[in-house]
Length: 458
Image 1 (cartoon, helix red, strand yellow):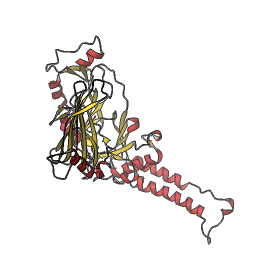
Image 2 (tube, one colour; image 1 turned 90 degrees about the vertical axis):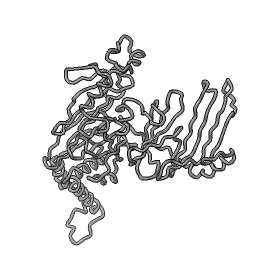
Image 3 (tube, one colour; image 1 turned 180 degrees about the vertical axis):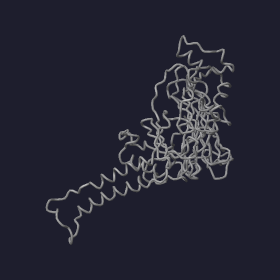
Image 4 (cartoon, helix red, strand yellow; image 1 turned 120 degrees about the vertical axis):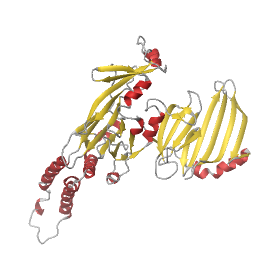
């Protein structure tokens, strides 16, 4: 199999040992007991019967606090959750994780963590992501066996399945595969350790024609004539597969609906204290997207509008219920208008709200959309702006909207409005009535936010 990959990041998945914690705590306790407090020479005397100085109080408190932190965080790690807290608290203090110093990479909220079972062993693992370094770690704790072991090595942005399978995407290393990313498929053994089961690359016919002169596309394998052929390598054997055969091969390991999407928390003292068996662990957005992106290798396909071109994915609580919803934006072509699908978190069967245009802002259940489309090489412009409110009961209620058609001169210096109409609710209204309604809602429009968190599907 051809090797044209350059890994941009990695993930080392380690098992975190309570025994190791205890040993470290014993050492720390010993070191703490040997700490000497520096005081002035005239203060080194029998202090019985006199008030202890503020300097001595401060130093003694510091020593006792260090001992307490060690006792609570390390010696008393009776479960994997206590051990995970200890690990993250130590990282906050030292910026060292898995014996690597990440002090240069802990700014801008770049560190986050998640807690969930990633290898189907019935126990939760700790995942730690350092976004600026494109690095993720996962740690496992076996409080009974008290052993430490590395169970996985993979790139940042991997896809995790709930049956012990991890797809390790080799980002930005398409080789002959064009728009699709090659990957390594890892499978967890009975001991929880992941091993490489296969690697997948392929051929993109259009990409080869544009970028790789002299490389032949295996057209005889491409039975559905869609221009893609997969190359699957397992051990010393390699084979070429068309889409249908590739899907059958992949489903021998796992299925798209088995994808899990960890909930990531910013690594703060407050969030670390939330770690327990009851912490919110995963969302189902990746399972939803796996079904609508051909296992993340293509753009999103909207049931309302069709395949998006250049899909963008964001998280934001649009209906103010405390759960982040999934926002998907995209166009149907290079110069086509934009559309938005919003997947409601916690809704049954992935309830999706579909809208014309781009979501320009969100505030207190209100969504403001703006959409522009062009015709005649940009000579005619269509604009559609509107405000909707998302109540707890769906569908959405349109508050006002504006449709306008504008024609431009040949030099695009001047334009003329050739058609426009305005609505307030379902009723056609005049421009002045529309402007009055829009002004009425300025209290929310002027304060709208588009501070969306990017949602990575790979």
